[in-house]
Length: 581
Ligand code: ISL
Image 1 (cartoon, rainbow, N blue to C red):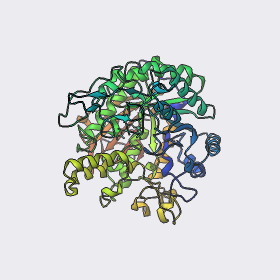
Image 2: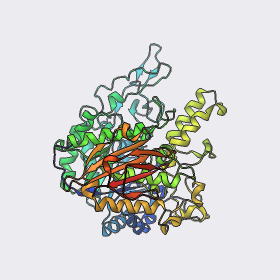
Image 3: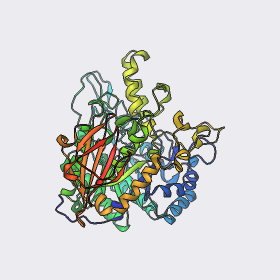
Image 4: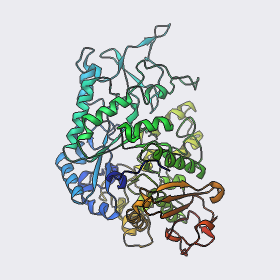
C-alpha cells in the first residue's frame, strides 16, 4: 500500500478517448476523416462520459507516417481542416467540459520541415546542428558505410546519406523522419515555442511521442551484434533513455508546462524497468504525469520482432497489471490504463475474442478492466462498440501501413519472393498490424459504415463487419457494449474514492485460477472494497469467494448475479465487480 496520501487531480479522474483524425468521420466526402467531422461528434463523445480526447497528429505533414512526420507544428494538414476549425473544436470541447490533448511529435520531424530543409542545405547551415549529422565511415575496400550499425525501427539502416551535403543524418523511424538533435539549445527553444503556441490556444496537455528517444548516447556506439546474419542491429541501448533525457523533460516542465494547468503522458519505448520508469513519473522528480510503458500492447509480440508469434496468455496481463499497479504508489507515480492505440491490432481480437458468440461479452470484460484499475484510462475510439480487427479473409494487400508493409516485404525478400511462404507473417499481421487500430469508425450500417459518403473511396478499408457492429445499432440497446461502457464509466465517477483513488491488491492465481484476473480495490476514505473478477477465457470458471460473502454485484456482463455467496461462476469472458456493504 502507498505510503503517500494520494493527491487528487483532474487528470487522475479523467478518462481519455483517443481519436485518430483520418478515421473518425469524413465531413467533406474526400474519404479522409477531418476536424469538422470530429466537431460534429462532440455531443456523441460527451454522451459516452469521457473527459478528454487525445488527438493523434493533425499538423501539416507529407503523411509518410500518417502525420507522425510533422512538417509544420503550427499549421494543419489541409485535408483535415483549418486552424480556425481546430480552434472551434477546442472551444466546443471545453464548452462541454471535455479537455483536449495534442500529440507532441518532437523526437523527429518530417524531412519536409523548414528546419530540416535548412539543416540539410549545407554543412555550415545555421540549423545543421538541429539534426544529427555524421561523416561516413569507409571499409578496407573504400566502400562508404553508415556511421554506426543501428537498425531503423521501421527496417533498414537508421542512417540516410545526403548526397548534397555529403554526410549521413540519423532517422530512427522512416528515412523521411530525421531525428532532432536535442543537444542543441536553439532547437529546444523553438520546440518550447511550438508547445506554447498550442497551449495558448487552449490545449490541455500532450501525449509525447517517442518521448524517451530524445537523448541518445553522445558517442552513438554500435549496437551489440545479436543477429549476425543481419546488416543492422538494434541500437536501443544507446538511443533510448539517454543521459540527458531527464534534463530535457525538466526543462520542458519549468520553461513551458508549469505555466499552464495541463497534463502530460509520455510514450516510453524500450525502457520498462521499475527503476527507470520511476525517474520519469515519481512525483518528486517533477517530470511527467504518466507514461505509456508499452508492455500491455506488446504482450503478443515475438521476442525478436513484433510480427513473430508469441501468443497471448492471461498470465501476461496478470503480471504486467500487478507490476505497475503495485509499483506506482511506491513512488507516488500514476498509471495509464489502456489496451489499444493506433500502433497495433484491437485488443478485443488479440487478448479476448471477436468471435460472434463471445464478442459482446469479451468487449464488456475488457471495458471492466479499463475502468476499475488505478490510473487514467485511455480508450481508443471504436472500443465503445467493440470494434475488431479485419478478419482472416482480408489478405496481405489490405494492409497499407508502412511499419507492417516494410516488415512483410523484408521477410518476403529473404524468402525469395515466395508469397506462399508468408502465412506465418500474415497471421501475425492479422492480429497486430497498426491498420486494425486505424480502421474507419463504424457509425451505422449505411455504405462505408457512415464514415464517408457512398461515392467516396475511404482512405482505409472499412471492416465489413460494420453492418452489425456500429454505433447506431447500439445507441438505444441497453444490453449493448456501448451501454455497458456508459454505465461503468458513470460508476467509476460515482465511486471515485474507490475505483480511481483506492488501493490495489492482487488476488493470487491460486485463488482465481490461471485464466481469471482478480484484484481488490479499497477506499482509504470509507474502507469500502471492490473485487474485480475477469475471465480471459472462453470457458466458464468458478472462483471461490467465501471471504467476500455478503458483497453485492456492482456491475457484471452476465445475468443472474446478485448477492454473493461462496462461489462466483464466471461465464466465458465474464466480468463481475463485487462491492462490500
Ligand atoms: O508501432 C510500433 C510497433 O508496433 C512502435 O514501435 C512505434 O513505432 C513506437 O512505439 C513509436 O510510436 C510512435 O512514434 C512513431 C509513430 O509511427 C507511431 O504511430 C507513434 O505512436 C514515429 O513517430
